[in-house]
Amino acid sequence: MNKASTYGLQSIFGLQGRTALVTGSSRGIGAAIAQGLAAAGAHVFVHGQSHKSSNRTVAAIRSDGGHADPVSAELGKPNSARRLVEQCEDQAGRLDILIINASAQINAPLARVTPEDLDVHFNVNFRSTVEMLQSCLPPMAARRWGRVVSIGSINQYAPKPVVTLYAATKAAQHNLIQSQAREYAGTGVVLNTLAPGLIDTDRNVDRKQQDPEGWKSYTERVNWMGRAGVPSEMVGAALFLASDACSFMTGETVNITGGV
Image 1 (cartoon, rainbow, N blue to C red):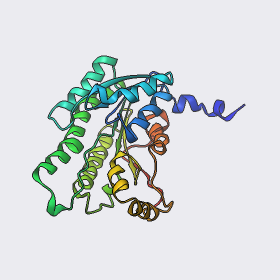
Image 2: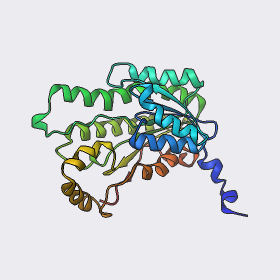
Image 3: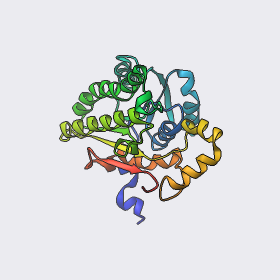
């Protein structure tokens, strides 16, 4: 008998019949995770600031035989995150998996941070998380199954000064995940954080183009592997955290950093 049959890997890691929302999934890490969840059998809501921005990820999922629909919301606006979850619940009848990936990151040392910068970080990275959890957790608990995965950052516990606000709001976001993990631990709903290190996404495009040698030097010393990660390397951990395999793990952080 092969091990897949012995251990029921499809039933443990498969997401057939599950519905997922991945915020900020029009590109980068979010797009990779959305495609991974769909490949595992989930019906995925692909979120962007507009339906148009999500169409590429939706098309990629559908071309591979998966199920996906675009949804849009500007998460920096009050109540938009709440309405986004409610829309998915209404459209699909349930929301089983929430991947909180969308975030704001404005690089500046604290002395140069503006009140507008503070508002953006707080609203997108923290307040929208509060709204989504308020909307999704009670229905998940009533159904006795749910998975919430917050895409955090190595900066949440090892902050760099240039990303002070991003790091602080990511730390606050994980604190919120931990508190609700404890609150909902007996309901079949688990909440965890996936914390990447340096990942080569479009956030780094300007830096790479403006100073390619500096980028190369930085990536060679940023971690033990001497390179930036790529979005697809986040998918395996996200699938674990979103599946039945994660039934006895909550309030934790999975670090994917290349070694630090």
